[in-house]
Length: 177
Ligand SMILES: Nc1ncnc2c1ncn2[C@@H]1O[C@H](COP(=O)(O)OP(=O)(O)OP(=O)(O)O)[C@@H](O)[C@H]1O
Ligand SMILES: [Mg+2]
Image 1 (cartoon, rainbow, N blue to C red):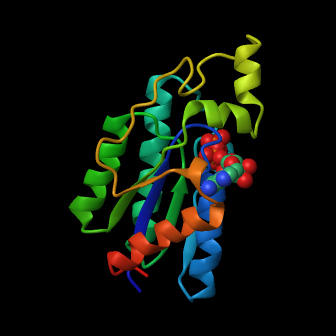
Image 2: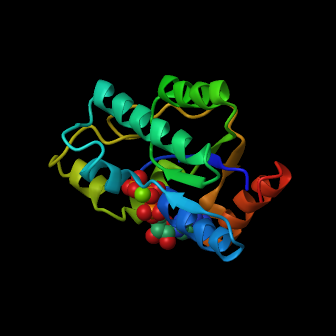
């Protein structure tokens, strides 16, 4: 089967991880080989020691992109729910895939910051507001929105299932599912 990297970029609590696992379950059920490279897990091992400054965030995204391409070029559907706040970092990952001829799709989980802050799954928005942390993407750290993603998901206007379905339809349309 054809592999591909599907990168889900967006703010904290936008729904990236939730949508990725919903889609992963469906794809596995249909016989696809699937890996989810989740930001939090990656930072424990592959990117252990990296912080949240511009350079380290860039390095984190390049490392994940490298592993994703390796897997995808071997027939795996690689779902990457990782914030990836910088356009040039995402572009470098796209280019690496292009150079190898490996399919790459960029999905913007475009949940507005107010909705994300209301969900606040990890309590980060509250901690930032309380002055306990700084450098929160979309609040006091940059998030450069994708200008022309392959798909934009409005997670605040639909259910998780509907969001995953939209992504599934994108894969079908590209001959990847
Ligand atoms: N349509 C939707 N798609 C995805 N998540 C949704 C949707 N509607 C509501 N939610 C809820 O929003 C929350 C999203 O949390 P999730 O951990 O997936 O965000 P994330 O983007 O991975 O954040 P982080 O960058 O902090 O890891 C979950 O509690 C999920 O149930
Ligand atoms: Mg997540």
